Image (cartoon, rainbow, N blue to C red; front, side, top):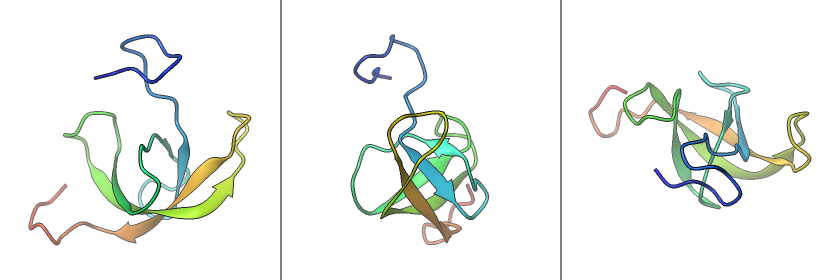
Length: 85
């Protein structure tokens, strides 16, 4: 796992997005893309439960950070690949 600029190796990535709706409503997440749909995991490991969220143009301020967070809107369960996450 690589560290984000300004962070110590092994530390958690700094969140830059917030989930709106769905199972992780209000959860902060880290995304590294500007458009599309992302798979948000409950924990940083890829084996934890996950849900699909669409990256929006919306921004919201959160008391934990001076910069606004990207709003991620829930798009539902990922059943297209036949796997249960």
